[in-house]
Length: 581
Image (cartoon, rainbow, N blue to C red; front, top):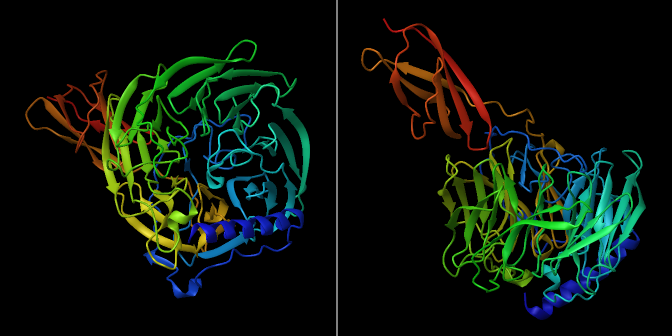
């Protein structure tokens, strides 16, 4: 699509989006398609079979809605992982709703209704939607777009509602374009919905004119933290409304992560910061870790810095730098010390503007190189392909590449890992002139493409930085330039908890007086094993077989294998062994 046609499309979207905000339809109007979907396959590949990963539950934030329902990255750690199941391609149906703008952060209230902000070229609107039909149950226009001091593309402006969160009381906490943070209660029963503003925090007195608020999140005490694109952090006492600020002096265009100790992890165009609130609530820097930066805003980036929201992963914090080639960087959570810096994608062909998938030692990163706006994927065009899995070494002293998929082009989506299925769900675009967009499922263990589900064709189905979000009954929601798309199987996939992998300890006696212990069964996700025989606990063992040779006990004992999985889960496998005579 030419720039002139793209501007015309944006103008049409603005008009339709404005009418949707003021007169929300009772029934969802589908997003227009460029090519009839009946001319394309509904699925490429074979339907998937769940092969889940066992992982420990992340700490539930006390001031956010339950994990997976509260915000764009699913939880306070920003892990982009979910215990919920995604569609498996078994008679999958597609429902869409046209709102004339991207419905990015998709959250769910206690009734299961969707609460989302859809951002059009003229401004954002808060919606409550039926999760099955996507029909509008309630809507509230938010302040319109404002000129910003940061400049940039209309399609790369995330302030004023692109990021928001739903709290534990079903209240949407939204940074607005006029420099406020608004708290809007979602009420009503499961069939009717209401929206009521219950608090309004004015930050214009402590932020610069034209400096948009990018994101707002609570720390573990309930104090709100707001971040502006220019790099100012403001804490808000929700009881008194007291404001305290810290200017980093470096732009920050991503969101941030919070942990249960009260720490806040913010990334600027120069460095990763760990901060805490001081005694009076003022943000204070605990440590600062600079990162490699080419100084170039690569195609696929919003600015010349990291494109990732930081991810908290156990003992570590992970992000990407802006070197060339770009690197996945892992630092220690305690002091910011660097564990590893692993180059991904090629020199001059790699960038990302989306958060990493990260849990335990497992990291998945996507390539967005080439996306500088919707025109980059029109008329059969697409972006440089690439998805890579990196794992932190079991000893926590380095990292290694596990696999790379260099065939799928992922222009901008926030990809998600379904722990229930063992699949990474991403949103891809190929070179077909019909401009189809696909929900693509990749095996997280191997990087193999399992299947692709057709979401729709044309500009309205370009997701433009919105995430994949899992709902109940195996539904995957994707925000797009047209509005919101839902993909669900005809029969909901199983949602049972993931079972531990079947493992057992093998015991042999290679020579008199010695034992050889090994781990057998499904060891695909095993990170390390430590064997305990009586009171002896040898060091952890790694590698194929996870074998250990040691002196045999003189009397019968129980051998314990303490197994740590790559996701951070831990298991104990036991076997009784006869004594040596």
